[in-house]
Length: 108
Image 1 (cartoon, rainbow, N blue to C red):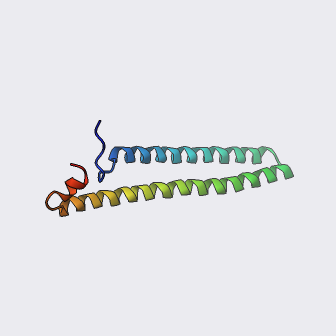
Image 2 (image 1 turned 135 degrees about the vertical axis):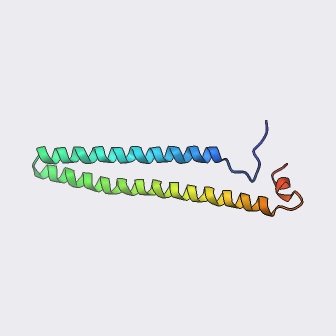
Image 3 (image 1 turned 30 degrees about the vertical axis):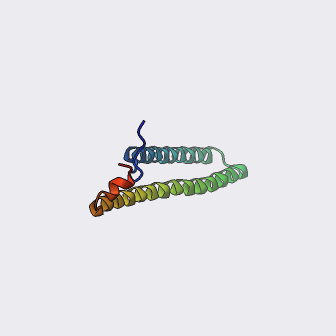
């Protein structure tokens, strides 16, 4: 069994994580829209003080839910940025490698 080179990032693994995270964000957005639609239906058909309280609680939940979605989006952006930094550093290391130093660090 071979081990991955130390200085080589796992592009496919990073792409999969990013794809999975984006799918999670899309699913969260869909769920949020569903909750919003249900809240509107309840508001249209249930007029009372309890309905107002319920809708306020849903609005508060939605605000916090959007904060969570935003955190996921920032995480995806940071992961994409880190991946690009690693790619650039790896390319620079290869370009500046002299006398096989880069390959030696990778265990080659």
